[in-house]
Amino acid sequence: MGKQLVIIGGGAAGPSVAAEARRRDSELKITMIERGDYVSYAACPIPYYIGDYIKDYRRLVIRTPEEFIRTGVDVKLRANVEAIDVDKGLVYVSDGSVLPYDNLVLATGAKAVRPDIPGIDSEGVFVLRNLGDALQVKSFIVENRCRRAVLLGGGFIALEMSEALRSIGIETTMVIRRDRPVPHWDPEFTDVILKELEKNQVNFLPEAKLKAIERVTDAKLCLHTDKGTIETDLIILGLGVRPETSLAEAIGLRLGDTGAISVDSRQRTSREEIYAVGDCCEVYHRIAKKWVYRPLGDIANKQGRTAGINIGGGNAEFAGIVGAQSFKLFSLEVGTTGIMEDEARQAGYDPVSNLVWGNPVARPMSRGERLGIKLVADRKTGKLLGAQAVGDKGAVWRINCLSVALWQGLTVQEIGYLDFAYAPPFGGAWDAIHVAAHALMRKL
Image (tube, rainbow, N blue to C red; front, side, top):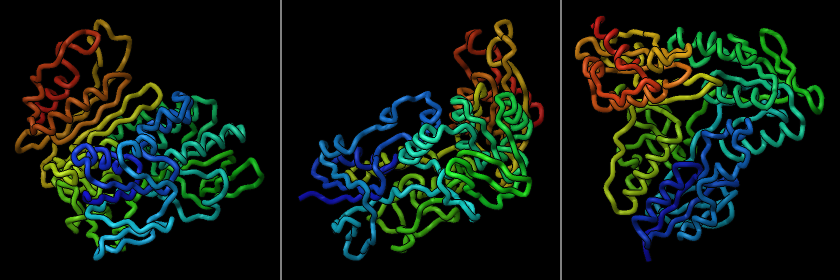
């Protein structure tokens, strides 16, 4: 009889563990436990499903439970883990089963931040953490013929959802507690984001304190703030997430400074036989030189594969991240990588930065498109520390290039002479990256 692997959580990271461990060890007995109705789905495209760009939710499903079962992975849906006995190596499940394990994987994900205000649990108030949430939101919009929505928060999910809701004709208001969305972006770039929201008729209410949510009729909610009351048909919370660590804490696993589960480069926790992957655990940031919390789907998949290789008998380490992120907002591409000035100083660097505006294509082919790039470097070494880009086109591929530069530890001078695939439709002979690098070199 082969070893037994139990995976708690079936979003992105857990199924990656199961698939890779199965490929490595055909004798391994694998059970995956999921409290919801779906496993192995892509959560990041959820706004595009709600906005009707993706018509069929099944396109978000990567692998069904039946497909896992055919590979010898047992899947328990709508099941909760009630207790774990680490001394005996047993998992107690709400369906009455008791599962022995040689290796246990926590892929418990994250939970949405919910403000402690009256009415937060009212019908018509939603979070967007999983596929089940997306189906509920879309069904509610259709069944109630929603025409007004409020988004609480100014992060990626709220911004992407603003485009999704406007694309299906819903009047949208974004309410945030700060003065601007995505506050870690350079103010010059968030000004562009605010103009894009305004251009697309997204109402924006900054520096608002939430007081209460009231359901006044079967079809209407009222959000009460210190800046007035907003009538709406539905409210979507986009206030961030926290790692789901209740099981980890119950069995005494070490948590990191971020509050997420502490892991090593092999995804092992403080107990050698237990692994953690995905939004419940930390990840090492190669530029900040510390363990951070970054609940992103691509990271979850890489962590899951790393754990699966090791559990299946291989030898793998996850080398960490440089902090690359991106999102689309109507006609804008927005991306970032690495660290900005404040975090750089905290990490012991002496940061120097510069922001330039240029063209995403060669000047003769320009139709007025704009591309802004901000670079941050260390004054002492000249090495790149971080970058941000906002533009009508070409921002994200530039951020991807700069992420590779960060990974390799390139200096700004080296970046200023990188060899790109030049053609006028894609950039100038001196690309926007070259221009930004040379402008920053003059400050070093």
